[in-house]
Amino acid sequence: MTVPSEPIVVPSPRGQFTQPSVAELVADAIRTQIVAGTLPDGSLLPKQDQLISEFQVSRPSFREALRILESEGLVSVRRGNVGGAQVHAPTPENAARTLGLVLQARNVALDDLAAALDVIEPACAAHCALRADRNSTVVPQLRELNRRGRAVELQDLAGAALIFQKFHQAIIDGCGNATLVIVIGALESLWSLHKKAWADYAEDTGEIPEPSLRPSVIAAHEEITDAIEAGDAARAHQLVTAHLATVSPLVLDHRAPRIDMTGARP
Image (cartoon, rainbow, N blue to C red):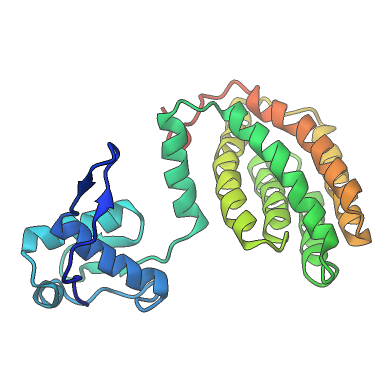
């Protein structure tokens, strides 16, 4: 690992050019290797003294580089006798956390997030229906989730919410477009935090939703699965649109304490 001999110049927010710090250069070099897979997910970075010697930087600069990577979710630093910095490959969950912070900083409301998913998720369902291999990839997974949804006890709201969230995630994951999977997956991860809060609040307060709600959700999921299996993209799009229009307001209107966009309670 080596720091580039000539510093990379990046534009500042005001349009001026600034040179990154030594810590930023070290973080960028390590980040590049994590993204490339040279440093595999779950592996440990070499010992701190070894890296300081390789990069030829001061200990404070190296520690600042680790803090940068830790804030990005790319490493987690463990201290003590069995300490070290463990590598974490970039994931949609990391993207969701960063995206959540941006949305929160801009005071974006949860109903705005729900509206975005209401527009994009039906398109993912249509893409699933257009896949030539849908009946060997997407459909079996959706069928299994529908079966599990029917088997969950009526009082287990959190368990049902988790399975229903996995159904929607399966539609996103099965759309066949890697960019949509990552971007929409990050949005769905944020939305699922609020759905879980809704289910937890209902269980804690005993405010169980209408008994007919879960059967209607399962019925909608089965209709969506049927449309995808039949290769009917237009119907799959229509059914997901109608389903979200019914369910999203129920989640938004609950009286649980609102969670923020990163999943932390205020």
